[in-house]
Length: 356
Image 1: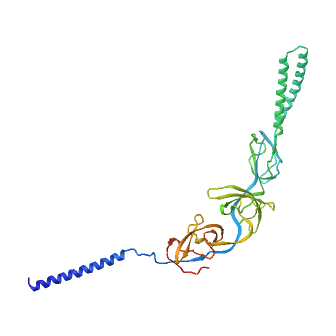
Image 2: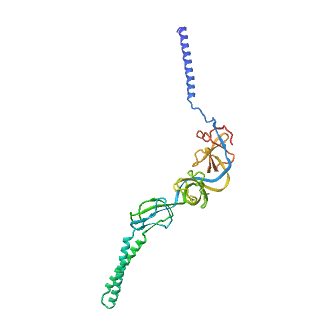
Image 3: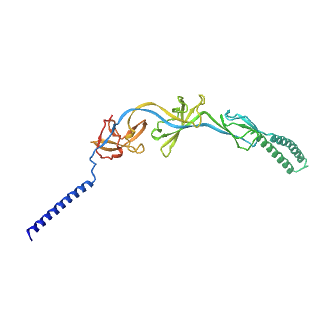
């Protein structure tokens, strides 16, 4: 092998070696670039706030729709043609007031005829009793006469009962809101004639969350307001508290609302009911935005040694953008209020604001 050829081979080996080393180095760099960056030690910037005590007004405001406390339907107690009806839409009627009458002319004629028959049957009965004493008739004839007399008397009683139901009477006091028939029309027994609603006293039905229901008492006062009557204030009283909550842990509470001052409120009106309590307390509170999963499964993140720590808490009443903390936190603790979606317990965090 000549020296020139040896040199060529050596050079080729060196070049191949250089290329191999270069490719190996580049692959190592590419592998390092593809390797996921470990960000677990990188601090997440967060905003924080401080758990603190501050006044919490013991009032509860909830929406409601007014409903009539008393309403009813004027009906016919017997069938017949209406000959008089003294009501119109908007008319005010009192409970027990006679507002119309059903024609009883035919029944009165029948009653007169029946009463005449009764007089004759009474005479027949007495005559048969006398005949029986003289053995001029038998007991069956007397019994038949008695049966005929009793049947006619029963018929007369039924006619009198029908005639006594001729008056059309309102079952409640209130305003006529619907008139279903007119005078001269025929109605059946139990047929609806008109609808009456009383708005002197109304009811407001609210649904109180379980966190507040224990503070609600029968007889408790409430303030009723509506956007339909700005500046007007009405007063209500708790009349009923349901002993059973619904699937959402809310309890039905009914308020009786006084509407005697001008009858301004109307059934079906949307209102706000504010239940008033006497005391104002200093309650432990945090911003609502610190809750990681809302009020149904409440927990927050505190900061311990610059790390986020999940803490399960129990919450109470809401106070605008704040919420009461019943357990799980102490006054002065710091809670994270931003970036919660990027945080898990144990993450390094860096507060970029000063807690209040």
